[in-house]
Every structure is written in C-alpha cells, then in structure tokens.
Length: 156
Image (cartoon, rainbow, N blue to C red; front, top):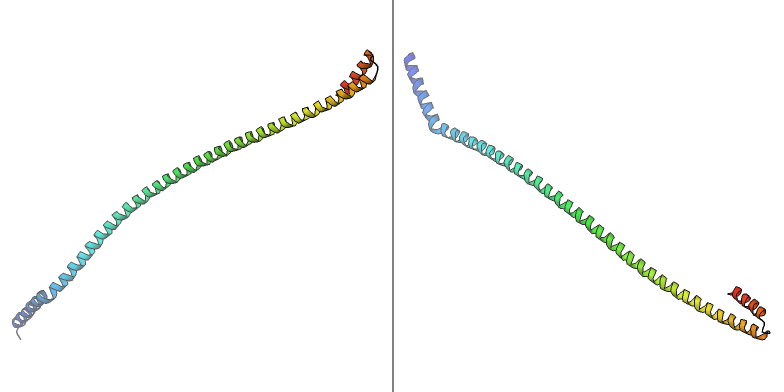
C-alpha cells in the first residue's frame, strides 16, 4: 500500500466526515447552543428585572410603612384629643351635677332654716303667752315684771 493512496483515502473520508458533520450534526448542535445562550440571556435579564422590581417593592414597602406610622400617629393624636374632650365633658357634667346638688342642698338648708325659725316663732309665741299669763296673774310690780322678763329671755 502506498502512503499516498492511504493519505488521499483518509483525506476523502475526513472531508466526507466534515461535510456530514456540517450538514447534519453541526446545525442541531449550534441550534442547541444558541437556544441555551438565549435561555441564559433571558434568565439574566429576568433576574435583573426581578432585582429591579424587588428594589421598587422595598421602596414601596418603606413608603407604606411610613404612611402607616403617620396614620397611626394621627389616630393616636385623635384618640388623645377625644380622651381629653371626654374628660372635659365629664368634668363639665360633674360640675353641673355638683352645682345642682349644692343648689338642692342650699334649698333644703333654707327650708330647714325656715322650719326652725317658724318653730322658734311658735315657741316664742307660746313662751310670750305663758309669760304674759304669769305677768297678768301676779300683781303689777315693775321688779316682778323684770324678773319674769329675765326668766323669759333666758328661756329663749
């Protein structure tokens, strides 16, 4: 065998192999590689979009938290204001009730005072009548009348 003939045969076989590989094997391999490259590029782009959306979501969450804290602060302020209003209303109601009770007590004291005065008047009248009876039953003497009047005054 001749080396030249073997070399030509191997060259033709290699050329056929290269042609076969280029025609039937190379396109699917390149298509798979291209598809894989595209998937990786899409995955990286999606990861970047996801990261960007996550940053935006974190910013929105921080804003929502700030808004919620502000609303909570407003609610607390309103609650404290309402509590103060309720306390003031209760104080006003209590003062009104106290004034009403004091007025009622003063009226009752006035009534009791008037009753006591009336009772004292009746007793004074009774004593005056009793004193007048004693004076009229006794003889008309200035000194006797003075002692009776002094007794009457001590009884008052």
